[in-house]
Length: 377
Image (cartoon, rainbow, N blue to C red; front, side, top):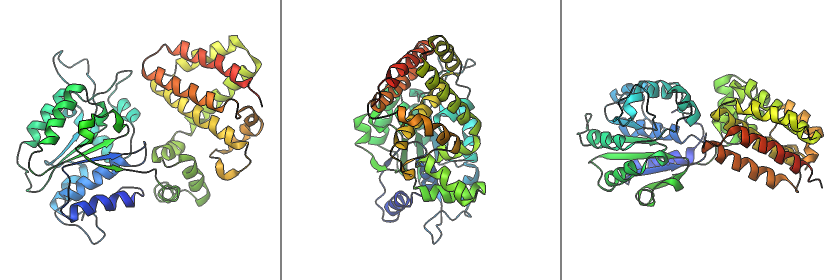
């Protein structure tokens, strides 16, 4: 089982199956990188396995498990957000099967992935990926068939909050009257965006952030890192496995974001409007997904500078380069401006998601930073 930590959630899932109290729809909720999809895939394998080992896990050797090694099983159906490609007919409603090859390749590499990764794989650029009504029609057809292996039929829906209204209403009817032997597993990061009628018909399980010790252990096992490095990265990840992996694989991007952050703060402190305008144009050129990652970094690192002022290393999650900058800069982030900085970052994230003019958004951010740095204790 390729799940990091999450024993509590796993035991709850398997206990329902073992005691014949299996709900027809499960809603796995939790923050990004906590392993919700990994849990969903592992549990789907558990339900489809014809024999379980003594550790309460899929046996890995039965016919069902062998088919699932490459996630190819006739009774397992994945649903996920898609986009409309230029090559598609004007009246075609994109469905998951249109991108099955890319999806299977991604999940075979790892059950831990983000929407950004998926968008890059399918070449989405600035499109918004959704789950269309065509997808619910396909599910009705697939799930109306008898189980080919005589057991459960499992429908795993990744990010159901991205269903359009028509699809959500059709899925609701399907969940209300599920085909015989069908289990729906919905994997959501924003369950509040789901129809209340859908949420009320599911068994909700909240997946917590992964414990730091579990991330550290997984890093040592999978990346052959030393104890000190593994623990540092695990603490920095703050319960998010994707952050831990990104810290290992994308050190160059984080270093660039640190440089961007330093440049912003230094130019804002000097009130150099002309150079700040150039800075905003540089960030604009990143593209929407990278802009979002930069704002995530900005928000996190601003918080770390604020916490640095308390003089307690256990409260900080910074690498060596970040800490070297914080040593002199942290005093500028304090009680008088930390909330405003956080609210500004949240607003920028919303603006980017809504396709606001990035040049205006980031130049406004630069000007606001000047004012916020003036708020000294």
